[in-house]
Length: 310
Image 1 (cartoon, rainbow, N blue to C red):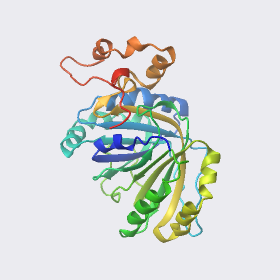
Image 2: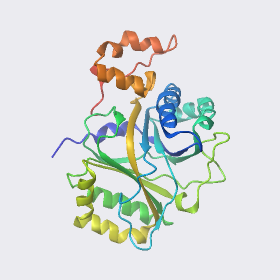
Image 3: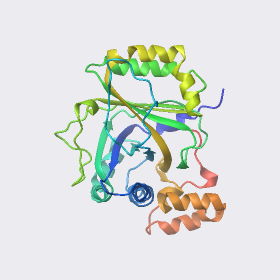
Image 4: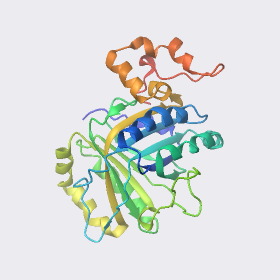
């Protein structure tokens, strides 16, 4: 069995999971590039942020991504990606929130909807067999975000936790991360970004999200046929009332362990070019520190300090 790197996520004690939809009329390529090159670098420089990842979705590929039981409704929301923002403690999260006004003011440029779900106790990474904890580029795996609207009461959380622990025993699962946020409140829009939609329908108010990754779509299909997964499918209707699945096309890491990555400082595409050319000099401290304001001490991850396990 391959190495499990899930312990590296334990530094994140408090988490925010945000779903986003690009602004109507904004071309997909322009949205993608702005989000991962411009918005990302602004976010990465704000104080308190311990972890920041974007995962971009393919809004046109929704078929056959995740089985759905009879009696469970389909979540029809059109989404273009998710962002995870993690914090080591509540003080760091408060510092980020206080500085976030300039970030929220940028959302109008690219989002028609952004919805931030709060996870005061963090998320649970059950398994992560990907060695690279600083991923930046097109998705190499078959990765799906499964949105499930939980029925009222604590039973759904217990079921999702228990069945997740059982399912990750299959070595075909490359990553399995479970988000169980608090119920979203439409009366308190989050994040407080002006001129951006923050209202969700009843099928996304009590959301749970599974991030599941496999080597290929075929591997996922074989996994769906296993006895443990059929057990999960058989219990779906009891614990959830709606489900939607979103295919990941790009995975971009901008902050890890409180330090920005090269992508977090220079932008995702610049970091890709540095990697493709093999320009190790561009990751040296004396160059990276040129991109920080005078007096800043947080330097980025470099090849000598890449985090692969806690």
